[in-house]
Image (cartoon, rainbow, N blue to C red):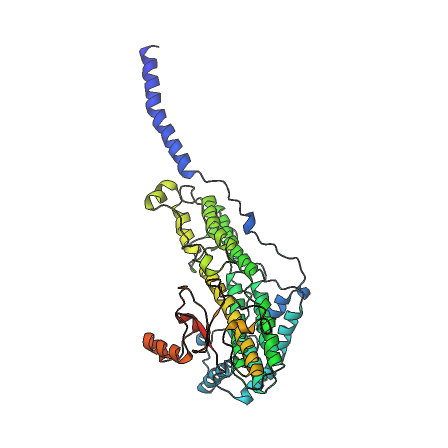
Length: 472
């Protein structure tokens, strides 16, 4: 090889090797991993007609629901504080009284009759929803809205509470438990409706509202023991819908995956005024994100790794749950730069909230169902035996098939006969013996003085040992 050839080879190597190295680095930096197998996070949806789907009747209550403060049915979605026409003082007073009547904090027979009369069609729609063979929420497009199909749930729950309380106040004790039971059944159908997590939580809240009404029956005189016993049995099948919660978590993953896919094709606008990804306007030229900045498959795989354990463990008691932790991508700033997914990391943090609290909410619901069953059975026992049971085991098998379990530690619910309270160990998993109603009020006043000014008693789940007093 002559000198010129040697020089040419050296130059080629001097230029080519660094270029090849740069090319290899670019390939490594832009290479995405294969798509994850997320087949277990898919949700089967039924192909059903509107007439067969009870969820449609539930939605239509938005067009018929009457509540003070709205000019006509169908306006419940409006925020009165943002309206051009502010309600006058008399309307404000009626709005406040209506809520107090519905929640049992005050009573006005005339207003109760008015609300029930004006909402006959709404209550008929609820009955139709419950009589339908299927109950499935519409598919959600996360790029447009979240749960756009829910009616005004707050006012609807107030109405359903009102109906139950009217029956109880008028001593229609064969009828009242049925109204509260329907609330639990409606909540159960919402939990299993293949909707997003918000829909499941609305279902759980509906059930817990109905449980409050059920427990109030134990403090009333004149309720026959057979009615209480039957209600305790009926509640046994109305605990939290675990598979419904699992499907809601799956849907949350699928919504995130849809956003990632649209970002990968360049069809999303990340700079819109809402602060959330949104479809680009028609005719807008798609522009994909650089693979140096965004790796969709990696982002979806990390999402799968976050959601799958929650779905797999949704039926476990709180004690047996793994530590899910907040959603995160492994690595740090240096890996962000070298790994080529800095936008993916930012989006993942923005779009994936910590959803593990939903499973805690599930545990709370199961405890409330169990505690309500115990109180109903205990009141029936007292009416027939003339005393309270020494232990909850005395309720088995005549009043309960078994003592309900505490979904926090998996052991039977606790009962302190001296303090007259049925209680759970709660999230700290420590049995502190429970508190009487008086002790709870004193603890609340001492530990949460500011909140106690407006609310004299704590929510059970704010207490060290969440408990429900035996008020009979």
